[in-house]
Amino acid sequence: MWLIVRHGTTVANEENKFSGQTDVPLTEKGLEETHKAVESILERLEGCSASEVMIFSSPLQRARILAEEIGKRTSWSLKMIDDLREIHLGGFEGLTIEEIEDRYPVEYRQWMNEYKSFTFPGGESYLDFEKRVKRALERINKEAELQEVKPGVKIVVSHGGVSQVLIKELDRHHPSSEMLKNAEIREIKE
Picture 1 (cartoon, rainbow, N blue to C red):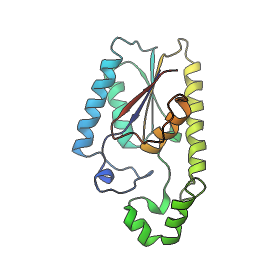
Picture 2 (picture 1 turned 60 degrees about the horizontal axis):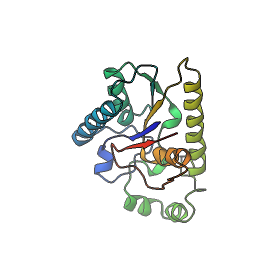
Picture 3 (picture 1 turned 60 degrees about the vertical axis):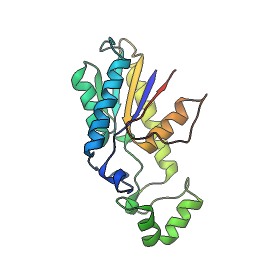
């Protein structure tokens, strides 16, 4: 089983700004959502031993805080994976959609018309981002295979875009292009 978890609300979320790989902090609301998500995960997995669960997380603080809190309260293994970071939006990071359209009018139109092949100025393309997230998924599966006792649960704490790609890859029966809400948990059976 997989538990795909998105981080809690950030300052950028509240300001309707794109954060990408900028390491923005959680708000008070985001910290409360984080604690509730942790409690929900612990309730779902009550009684699971150290060998039954592995946690994987983006190293960005908005995701890492949730993963580390689970790790502190359990004996479950926790690994940070750089490839679970959000898409690198380059010059678009820290801006609202209106600011992007105003400052980058040509790039904005390209992004809206060709988002999969578009490369963010100073950032990465969606296709490269998708490859990176798939590489993270391969690494998670390899890490799980290396365990003496194969974990039955893999928790992945990351971001909206990352979770979108993971769900598309893992949940072939119910693929969704919907982005998880802040602190939302999606369970996917293997």
